Image (tube, rainbow, N blue to C red; front, side, top):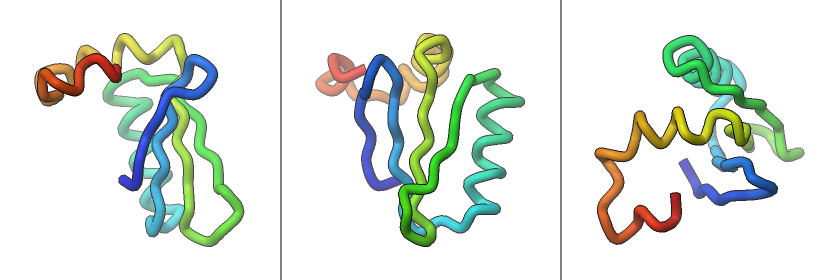
Length: 77
């Protein structure tokens, strides 16, 4: 993963260097295992992707990853 940020009440993860098939697998896992509402966008260059986690799914994602976020970074979530 390259980076992430919060944009318009959604979480944005920029993924560069991954092929479309790998992004689709990741998206399917996030949707089926965690029931996250997400969208995938190609940002114009080959193998450059953005995954958006919709506002309705942020609390679900937080509950999945919160134990892995170091305390000094929790304010970002």
